[in-house]
Image 1 (cartoon, rainbow, N blue to C red):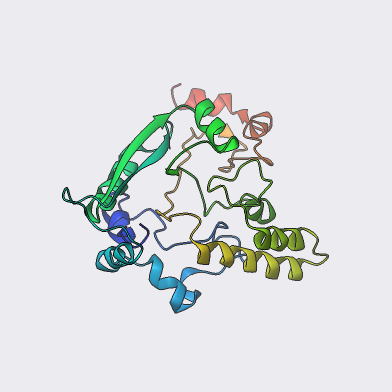
Image 2 (cartoon, rainbow, N blue to C red):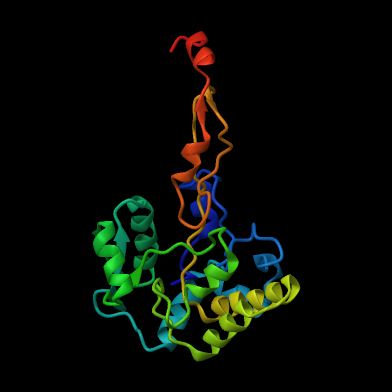
Length: 241
């Protein structure tokens, strides 16, 4: 399914060149020292993240999923959070349809979406957000067996031990090394399908003072920044508002 996605073309067309299409691990490459850029991945690993629909079909044949009389190999579900980009999911589903995978997109609100992840009751695949530039220890802990947010429902004692070792590291250098190892373990095991990373844009009026584009002031603190902003009333009036 990963090899069926033409990430570079999707970026150039759908995202108008704004996305970061090169695959990443669960850590974003903006976290210098905590992740390995795609260009430096081993060739054996990179080949499974490159667009190759013929190779994708070959892998499906070898895995025992031949095309049926209707051209479909198997059908599955893509569980979609309604506040995210539905059109992009439809585009991805079309790519998968070309290699014989029938996709039903199930759109749901945040409450139901969060519930099926926490309770691990969904079928098929689910929206998620690898490549997110956040606390790297928190990122790799997502896929730990006892994590409350573990979209692929990974239950891997080897990976659990890797995360715990990184959490127990006593130096930054040791922590970076162990996080990179855990990140590459996720990449090699294909616990997610990389679809590219699109930017978000923040737009504000020039009379809003003290804002520098912050999204969070801490872990999931989206609102704390508002206490540190103020309005330049004189500038606002000068501009006719």
